[in-house]
Image (cartoon, rainbow, N blue to C red):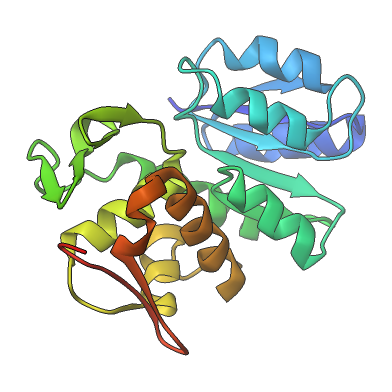
Length: 227
């Protein structure tokens, strides 16, 4: 049985979500604020539904702390919030959220999104045990490790997945739509700028090798095998 941590300071919403997820066969635990969320996350739920506007650390701060802790940085997170601007969405996804659902909540849509994220999180990565080397970059998919000049550099989940996909298709131009559909899924509401933000973050981590990633204007990106 999968366990879902629901984090929302609005009792009516938390109770409604818990009731419906329990009917679907999930085990549900509830946190009312950001501090409780971090405490409950240490019990390793299979997924976290996380509100943004909360006392005792807002959702953005909670997500940052989750992703900076090796005990919790691989737990998938879906933002569940009344805030719905593109800026909020990009910030949440940039920090490592897997999806973003705007209130008022459609229970069927919520359940579908949860199943999608859980499924993607469980899908075995073909060739995951094989390292991939592109120039000075070495990726070990099964260990979620990236080494640059033999120095290990931490990449949050989505940045890692984007870099891995580009590395598997080195020297091939990959368009934004392909990256969005492959990494986030076709039924997750994200925008083109989400990919651009993740590419920018990846380039920052690549440092002097940032130019390995070419921008093909109006199309997408290509990871070159050498400079």
